[in-house]
Image 1 (cartoon, rainbow, N blue to C red):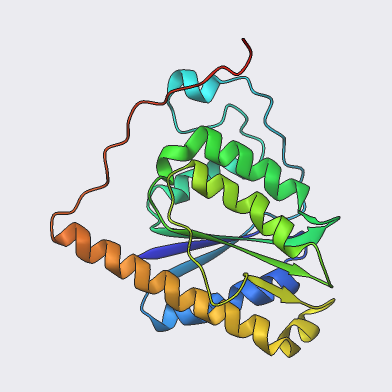
Image 2: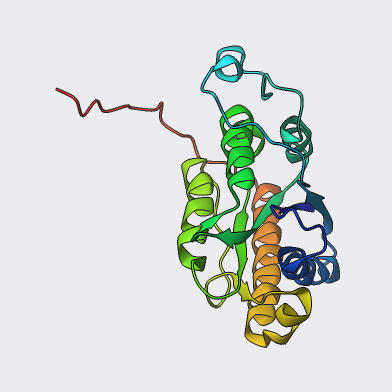
Length: 209
């Protein structure tokens, strides 16, 4: 089993990375393979709604000049996901949201039914609003959302300050254990012949009459 952890911060080894690393240690201790993906500081396009990916059903975005298709490709063989972000103006990184919009719109089939979690880091506030934004991608794509024992957040201006947030780090560790538990439950269910649920064809209600 493998979990992809996506660092939505421009800072490779900053506060968000520190939180993801705490989760990674737990997952590795549960014999689950991990990979932390840094989205870096290169430009990431927003989705332009061209729908080429949907019309071709290619699980691939038409734009090839950033990391989006690389993540979709890795997602095909992954079993679970954690997306992390710093908090900016009470919302996640705009670059992470641009990435997630395209990753899930073009490559949703590579993520469906696989467990996922959001984690955020902040100096003080805006955390729950940011978690809500990220989690909506999962719920729209039929993905079980993995909890901890509190909202998935850490606080601090620097990695050293995050390491002083003992409750926040415990939340990350509990999240790692819960992710491992759910992945093992899913694996056991598949071995017992329990398949993914059948989903009805999408009904779209038009509210404009």
